[in-house]
Length: 88
Image (tube, rainbow, N blue to C red; front, top):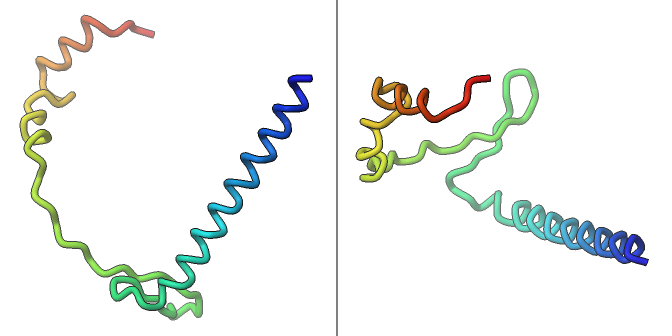
């Protein structure tokens, strides 16, 4: 009875995911009030909102810098794609 075992496996998977999500939400609830980069604010409309502190910009990765000349906007890339991709 393969169908029955698949249903049990699906049920176990769902239960596992529910436990994982519950644990993650409990951790968020526990740690959010002490996180200095996140604040809950009250909007003028009376609704609550989450305000995040701005992040410090990271340097552009070297691999991305090397890839930019080959971006899809570059004419040689457009020609190469046109040769190898089927038209629909």
